[in-house]
Length: 239
Image (tube, rainbow, N blue to C red):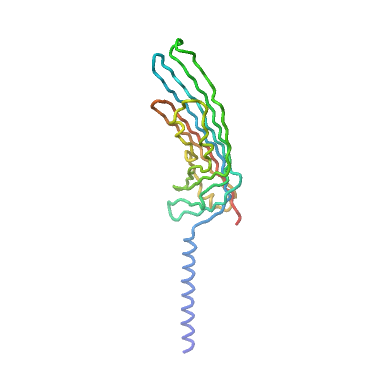
């Protein structure tokens, strides 16, 4: 009698252990991959433009502006970022926090202004260089994410108000040009999920490079060309 009872208890115990192993296996399979990195950023944002403004009258006066705004940036120290693997097929990896901090850099603005008359009797043509202006910044931040599988995209740069407000010294520049804010988001780039979670890859980088052109029309006619390059470097942490 006692032997039967012992056998039944052993049988129940074995089944329980088997069920526990299955449950643990399911939990491990459901746990997303995770990796920790020190992340650094460097980049260059450039906005160049040409605009033309015509004042009609007894002698048409044509004013042409040519200019450039260039911002160079880099991180002064790494940001700790955790990468979490996709939660399902076709899903993108997540970054927590998806922010790069401690960004410093310099913005430079330069240009020229040319005034032409259609007739020599109306005056002398003039070409003048606009004073070159420069401003530095520190402590800026920017968010980044992977909105689609295997792509990285940046948001707006925060903390660079002085660089954005860098005004030109040429009179009567087109307000439409100032309204165009060149951002890191002009360029996005692919990221290999395998590199993120492969412990045999101690460091890798993601690089974006893009150019876009905008046409302006109205009182001022012209074009604005934006070029953006950036490199985001991931250095794997051991813990």
